[in-house]
Length: 373
Image (cartoon, rainbow, N blue to C red; front, side, top):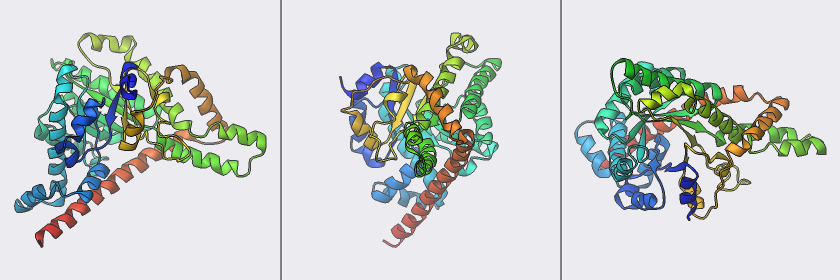
């Protein structure tokens, strides 16, 4: 049994965190599906790289230029075109799984992250333009975004809630999902076709916490250094494990039972940012300790390649008690993890906005270069 097949047998889905026109058109996505991929996620950074490195978009860009489209409009239309094609490739999986697998995510422009009404409006535009049941609109878990999540889901639009870092924000996201289902029931609308995932970011947490631990290691005596090293690379995983425990409380208990009886699906946690940023960690560092039933791991190409030969173990649930010890140890070192998680959300929105602007700039440059050919 291949590594990805084994992960599926353990209750977790693997999604691919990458998309490009050539991946779709030249059969690469079909190959990934044959290897076990069950969904695809995208973001402006991925699209910017795809447009920068290839010429597959030139024909569409010329057509949009002829229509007088702005670079911002081009961004939206090119993303819609790729996601629509990817959704069609994944549609057989969606149909065979009765809507449990086979999704592609498309992101609302991060410039709308602090505007609830604008986020809802763009989610509606994307959903209507794509016209595919196996699409999820990505909305960041800001204050404004969470409000938009509830209304967007209540309208029957699938949502991937992204940039979740803290337990507190996760709890609000999960409750927004449940409230949206209640809203639909109150309106006499079905809830059995609504799909949503909660994207919890992992390795970015270690990027900050490990840096603080390394600073302490520079001056720590031997006994203390051993304790500090034991915490390296553990904060993001422990935080995700704690969130998974909250997922079980919210979606496997009596509170969700009534909604489940009406056909509602639970909002699965999706582990994002699971590539190893630290070269000292293996490519699969964020795999085994995040495997558990009712979860998704969205992995970039280099991590996916490592999974093909990996022998996975489902360690998440068995290590939940240890995760609290890790979090306690971090707190004893004077590291304010809740503050770090809040700052990571703010930084994440900023990074997405920067990537989006880079994509707009890339298309403006591409537009100019094609105009003079």
